[in-house]
Image (tube, one colour):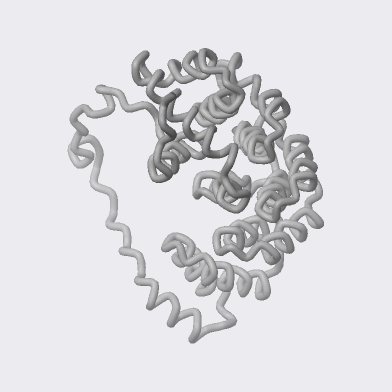
Length: 277
């Protein structure tokens, strides 16, 4: 029997399986990049971003300046300082009012910072303003998953998919939620279209492959992975998926749920209310 992969190796597989957004590399993509200065007139210089310390000082000096607070929120978010970013965005909301998009962004920041109660409050407020906002429901679904409340998470996913029926990421996140809840038949049904629909993104196919690996469907896993990798690479990747699925079956709930907070999953929460891709 093949020995289970080490946890670091499995976490690497996780990045491929659950949240991978990278495309398959091609030789053409490694070609010589043309000099943009010879292809078009030189664009005007863009001012360098202001250092975060300067933005903090400006925001502190002008607490009633919405623009200063918004710039700090943007910079702190980009730097991964999610608690600081959420505090700055909250000041923007206090000064300039709530919109569903601002509240969904605020909730996502709170999720990244691990503040689940505040995240739930922000997403709930967004849903109150815009009951069919896909991002509000998708954010609530992730929050409930992190809280271990699969029933409420699945209800929120269903509402998110009603608001954005063509959004593959919401469908994919719902399937992963069901996988983590050990509800494998439902997880497979949720993502089954990724096996037959040509427009299904790679992430959806890979999440379905992980679900199929958990169900012991090795041949189907290899067929799916061959769409994105050559034969031997697909076989090797299928074994990685199998090892990860075996770990997931016995992983502590907290460790498994933490997979839902990978950056690509959070970026996928729609800030707009309509359907996504």
